[in-house]
Length: 240
Image 1 (cartoon, helix red, strand yellow):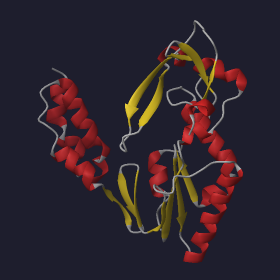
Image 2: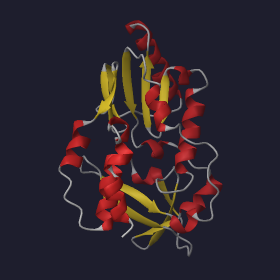
Image 3: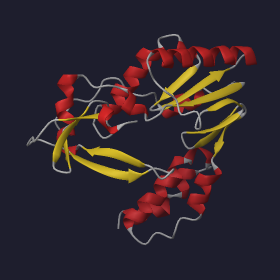
């Protein structure tokens, strides 16, 4: 996606936010807004993404699953002109504003979710889950019905002018990775990569490291018998 489609030059302005850069897994660069100063003054979006547990439960009884990955999902949602001034940032001595939805704004997640709900329409949620920028098409019926569901979703995305990253899409699967879990037609199980990260986590030497380790473990607490009782000794260390 071209830079000049994402932002517009605004000349020199005093009020700006900061941009930061992080590397994606594929080595490309992700641009983020450090908008903490302006987020304090913004009203949160009323539209919220679904609860993660509800998303996972929606896969119950699925016979076929397809996941759709949108190209730079947030950058495909335009911002109205009145709102662009709040995304102003400086780069190489010049001032710019975002023409599209940036990552980092307090309202971005809710705005994206609202846009996707409008694009997909009221009937699609019966077989398509939209969680943040993840789309999953879930069919409990026949193979032919699943193809029909895929066609409906892709047609709606195409009508809205949204594009997909075909290399990251997974079509007609029995098992997928999503939300940190392995989700299949048989149920939900842990991701071996996540388990390996817990097993190989260095022994915590500081409170911050211990909190990080407990955060990893807590993610899979539903799979760990007597989890709350098991971590009491570690939680006691946080009080010291």
